[in-house]
Length: 298
Image 1 (cartoon, one colour):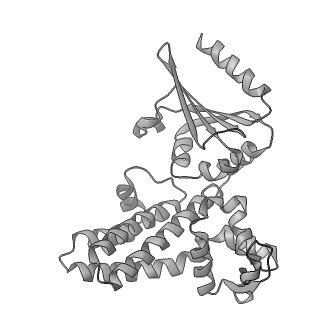
Image 2 (cartoon, one colour):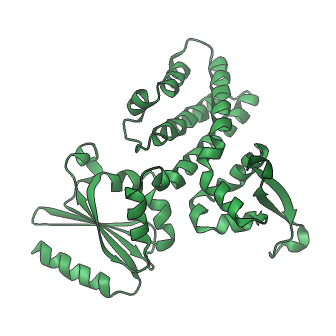
Image 3 (cartoon, rainbow, N blue to C red):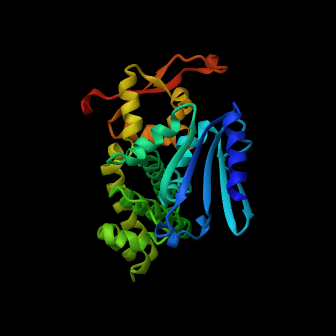
C-alpha cells in the first residue's frame, strides 16, 4: 500500500512543471545512530519553484512506515544543502537516488558530494568563517566598552564557529558532539577553548587572550575560507559593485555578512575597494562601493 502511494506521489511530482527535481535519500542505520531527528523510512528532497517557504517539511505515517518530504525552492537549494541543517542530514543517509532533475542541479550536487576535497563544504565553510568574524568583532567591541559578560558570550560563540571550521578543514561534517570531535581532530583549538572556559585567570584576561587567538586565526584563514568569493571576484576582472555580489546566487546565504567579509578581505590586501557609478534608485546620492582582485596577491 505504501509503495502504491509513493508511486502516485512520484507521478504527480514528475508531471508538475514547477517541480525541478526530486531526490530520494535511502537511510543507513549505522549513520543514523546519533541522528534521532532523522528517523524515517523514506526521505524525499523536492526542488519546487512554488515552495511557499524554504525549507518546507511534511511527514506521513502509514503501516508503521514514516515518509518525510522536504520542499526547497531552487534558489535556496545550494545554500540549504551545505547548511547546518542540510549537510549533516543528507550526509547521514547511505545513498541518494535522483528521481527527477530538470535543471541539472541535483546531478551537480551529486558530483560534488562524491568529489574529493571541500567543494561541497565551501559555502558553509565560508559562512562559518563569516559568523566567526562577526562574533569576534562584537566580542572585541563589548570588551573595549568594558561589558565583559557580553564579550564573554560572543567569544564563546566565536569558539563554536572556530570549532566547526576546524572540523570542516579535515573534510568532516561537524557532529552534535562537536567538542569531542574537535578534541580528536584539532587539539590546539580544543585546548584554547578549555583554557578560556576553565582558567583561574580573571574574566578580562581570558577574554583578552581568546581575542588574540581569534585574531590570529582570522588572519591566517581568510583567503582559504573565502576562496569561492575571492575566485569569483578575480574571474570577474572589473570591479564588482557590492550590490551585484549580494545578488549572486552562490552568496545569497551570506547576505548579512558579505559587507563585513568584503571589507575584511580588502583590509587583508586580497581585494581592493573603490567607488564606482552603478545603476540604482539612489545614484544621485553618491557612488557605490565595489571590489576587485588585488594584483599583489596573485
